[in-house]
Image 1 (tube, rainbow, N blue to C red):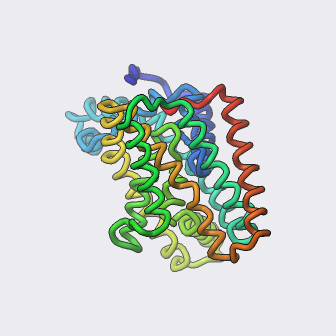
Image 2 (image 1 turned 90 degrees about the horizontal axis):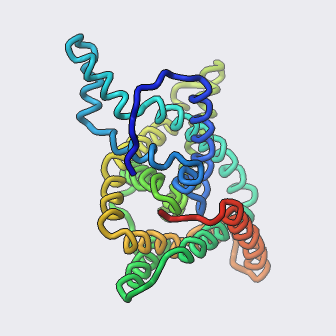
Length: 320
């Protein structure tokens, strides 16, 4: 899991390559059932990603901020290299680009084609659970219980029986922390977490509105007030995401190191329990008639086939 850091000159081609990695990873994390962590594994930069994320510590950030002092400048430069920011920054920009593009498409489709969108997502999630469970062993009762616990918890959250504490700004902040933490887990998608929490469409709409109002402001056709509303939501989510990276992500990694199989079974159980979550979005728009159920099922099959096809092309997903 370690990654040997060495001093590198900033290469434009390297930056472009890492940016492309970010595009791939962001696209995967914006789609439920497809994991950015899996993309990182398949493209061969998962170890470097984990090393860079775990190097983001408050102490190193303070060292960088003290770089204005000539006596501390050497340590600031070392801290920058240790955090591997020349990798994380273009990767992050690529991810943000992909998420922004996907968010716009999701906002449009959620309004115009909710059955197609959320039926497709249901198939993606279901197939993802099958693929990942297929690669995990169930040698004892405790393994089965770990998977069952994750499934039941996700079902309870999806049905509204179990809710995160708070609402509004606090829920957005917590959603960011949980969703971004999922980024480092092969098999778990940040979008899946947001769907499970009922925040996926809302946050996609807010991101699209923020980018649109920001563009209008820059072109002279918008107002600052139009930017502040959705911009506040985006900032809260990003702040929660940063907290998640430096806290929850580390907790999950330790759990994986301590009880790898049980932790993975619990996490994949969360995926299995999330299968019906997208269907709530359809139920908010349409009554569940036979025709609606059949059309949703057809789109779910399309999503499942897409995921199984991706699995076959990739040579099988390893939940790590």
